[in-house]
Length: 156
Image: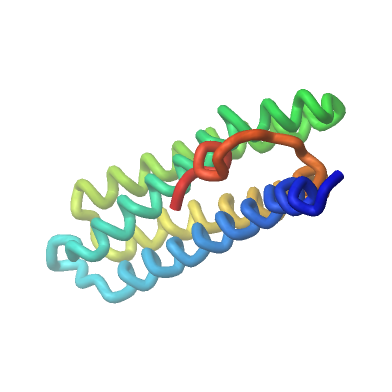
C-alpha cells in the first residue's frame, strides 16, 4: 500500500472526528445565542441562522452516514450490523429532536424552551458521537471507500 493510500484510509477517521468537532462547536454557538435571547422578543436573526444551520448540518451528517458510510462499513464488516442499526436509530431520534427544536424556533418560543430543546439534542448527540467514535474510528482507519467526505459525512 502506498503512503497516499494509507493517508486516504486514515483520513476517514480524521474526517469523522473533524465533523463531530465542528458540530459540537455549532451546538455551542447555538446555545450561546439562546442564552443571549430575551423571552419577550422575537428570536434574534442570529439565533434563527444558528439553529437552522446547526439543524441542517447535523441532519446532513447523519443522512450522509446512513446513505454512504454505513453501507460501506456493513459490506466490509458484517459483524458491525447491530452497531450500525443502533447508530441509525440514534439518527432517527436526533432527527425527531431537531424537528422539535426547529418547530420551537419557528413558533418564536422563549429562551427557556429553546434551551430545553438544545439540552435534549446535546445529550443524545454527545452520547451518539462518543459511541460512534468508540465503535467505528478503528474501522474507519482501514475503510476503503471512494466517496467525497462531504457525501459520506455531510458538508460543513
